Image (cartoon, rainbow, N blue to C red; front, side, top):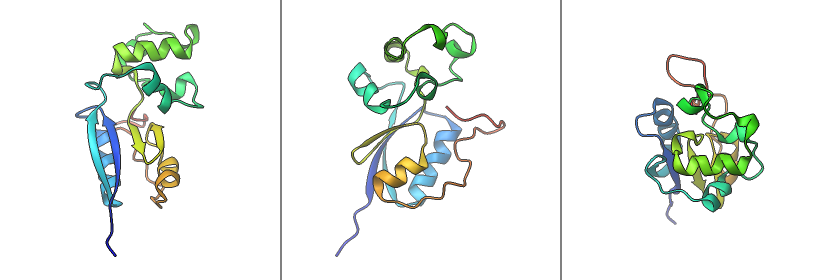
Length: 139
């Protein structure tokens, strides 16, 4: 019998320190990663929606994106569908990482969902989603 590594697709913002730590944790736990740039991928509404099922606007948006921080986009005044269209033209708005794990599409670094989707037991006590030099979640 041989062991086959579980493979996931990991959409990152190149250079993001939080994403780097997340990838290291996944590799330490035996996962093989196909890494893609969230910024260079050509997104469409149907694909993005598959990552956002059951999530609210604030759960799918990168709250550190310049247009959000500057108030150029007010989440209270647009619909989820309008936000998704904005993400298609400006992918920095997408909360990252986006992960395809088995049959599951996951928005954000959700260890519990990864464990469930891939039958893993990654520790959920690590603060791996926190950016260097701050206590803010790395979106």
